Amino acid sequence: MSKKRDIFCCGCGETVSARFTDGGEVYPHRKDLKALPFWKCDACGNFVGCHHKTKNRTKPLGVIPTPELKKARQHIHRILDPLWKSGRFDRRELYSMIAHALDIEEYHTADIRSIEEARNVYRTVKELEASHA
Image 1 (tube, rainbow, N blue to C red):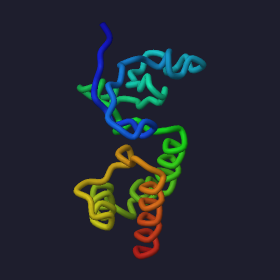
Image 2 (image 1 turned 90 degrees about the vertical axis):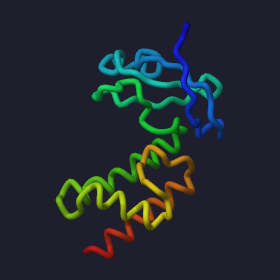
Image 3 (image 1 turned 180 degrees about the vertical axis):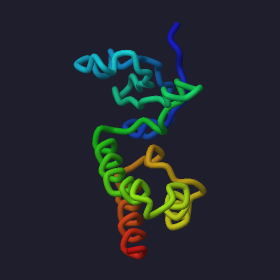
Image 4 (image 1 turned 135 degrees about the vertical axis):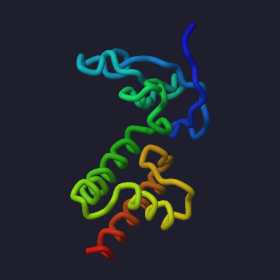
């Protein structure tokens, strides 16, 4: 019997019963990812990784993104991460400022559900960067 978990799928636009699998299925060409845990939406084929380096190694890394959304999130991290890694911002404080600007309780890139949300986050990060130059 396969393990299932309810997770929001951005491709389907709803919460789905995602199936637990491994990197051998979702990245068959990447032997280095074979043993890593993933949750997959069998309806659309999209998937999300897990917090595999923690005690709860099967906890999903947010919602299940589409390939386009995955690229948008990576783009956000390319501009966001240097701001806190350089010491210019405290990471928690920066994420809190993003949440406040977006009028949401808590911000995490893995919770972005649409390209429009990704664009709003991108604009917010660029504005925070410019205002704290």
